[in-house]
Image (tube, rainbow, N blue to C red; front, side, top):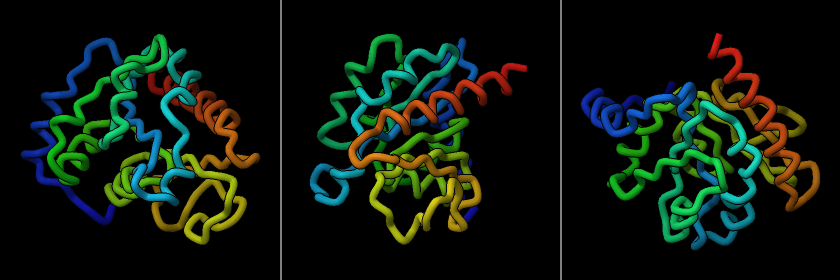
Length: 178
């Protein structure tokens, strides 16, 4: 953990995310900043997350805060997606929200890095194009011990990445339910 968050902020966000009937609280960031041209290639879109909607006992929390956040208002059928992003004033609020989650699933964005520096479990979805930060052919990273990498095998195809995430999320849910 490289970064800490004020306990007062964590407590405030804890009160906001109370969601009975949920076994796992998972933050989602499905796209990069649309103003950032490289960030556009990191965007998979919320509709790519349809397989995750089929997993019972998971409540998802939107961590996507920008002009395209309206997608959170129409999540895939069956997905329990809570959007509190209108209440996020700054990165300290985002960090406090993340500290109340069990897991963050994010494309390669600031949200993924923030979860990593906070020491929270984070699954980062990567494009097929290699980048020095993520090294080659690894599913972990020396930068963030709690981060797991899920890589595209075909450029632009998020279906295999999301299928792998779905399988692992089901396994995690099964392990936590015991």
